[in-house]
Image 1 (cartoon, one colour):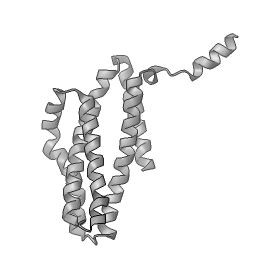
Image 2 (tube, helix red, strand yellow):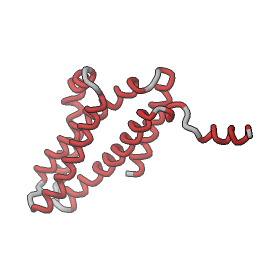
Image 3 (spheres, one colour):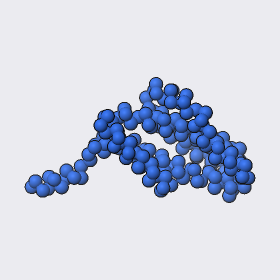
Image 4 (cartoon, helix red, strand yellow):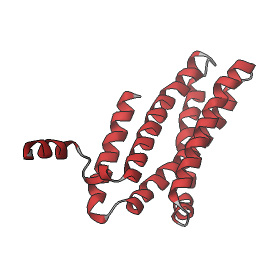
Length: 166
């Protein structure tokens, strides 16, 4: 009987996996990371193959995704620090999803142009800044100090796997 108890205890969640809030944030972050990895490849491919983007336009597209970090990183950190993190993360992910849905809709309507793709990429980058800052600030809210290192390690491992998968 004690062997059965030991076997069952091995399969029970332990450490950070014991926290339902952590499991939710880990799952959402990995799914979001997978979507971001796919988007990072899909938008430039769409620009080149469908819109026949020039090298200069491609540079603008890549820059438009990353420039929000420089423009909004610090003020976003201050803003997010004074608000509940989870709603910010949810709003940022919903915003990114809505923007990504605009791409096939614009293509279907025949109005997809490189300028629209640049604006969408910039706004996705802006929402990503909000999500990343809120995500990093949310872990200390849901985990104890002793679980924080394990939680961060597992979260970053999940992101890495999502990027490779994407």
